[in-house]
Image 1 (cartoon, rainbow over the protein chains, first blue to last red):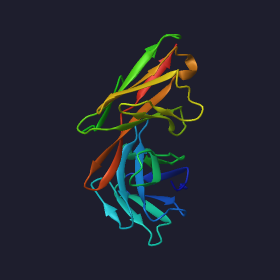
Image 2 (spheres, chains in turn blue, purple):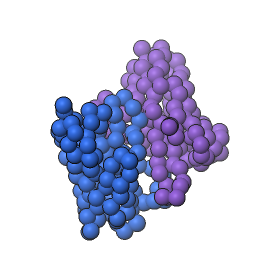
Image 3 (cartoon, chains in turn purple, yellow):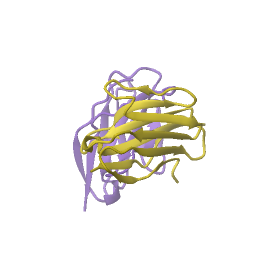
Image 4 (cartoon, rainbow over the protein chains, first blue to last red):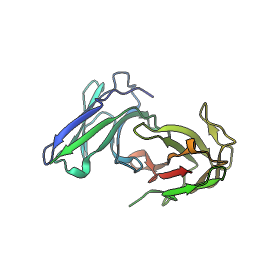
Length: 110
Length: 117
C-alpha cells in the first residue's frame, strides 16, 4: 500500500471548516484513499473513502486532486466533538488490512 | 450503530494471569479479522491476522504463544493474552471488513483497554 504524509497537528475554530491535507504521491491506479479518525480512548471510526471522484457523506467531504497524489478531508462545520486524530490511508479495494501512519491531531477550539 | 463490537471495553488483571478479548462482526460475516495494539500517544500497530478455520498469522516480533488468537466462527475472533505482564498493558483493537455496494470497508471495534497489575 502507498505511503501517506500528513501534518502532525492542526487547530480549527469551532463552527469553521476544517481542511485536513494528505499527500499520497506514490498511489497506484487501483488504490483508494480512506479516512478514519480516532477519538481518545476509542477505536478508529470510518469517515469516507474515494478513488478519484470527490465524495461527500453526512460526516465529511473528500477532495482528491486530478493526479490523485493528494487529497483533502473537509469537515464543513467543525465541533468540539471532532477533536481527534485523523488518519489518511491508501489501500487497494481487495486489501483487508490498514497500515496506520502518524495521522493529524485536530484540535477544535471554542 | 456499531458494526464491530469488542468485549470487554476495559479489563484489569493480575500479572501472570490470562485474559480474553472478544471481537464480533455484528451484521456480517468476516473470514478475516485483524488485531492491533496501540500504546499511549502512538499509532495502531498490527499484531496479527485472524483467519476463520485456520491458524492466525502474526507480524514480526509478536509472540504467537503469548497472544493466542482463535477465529472459531465467521462472526467471532478472540485474542487471549497469556501470562500477562505489566508491559502488555495497552489498548487492543480489532477490525473486520464488510463488503457492500461501495466496495470493501474496514470497520473497527471500540477497543479494549488492558491493564496488568
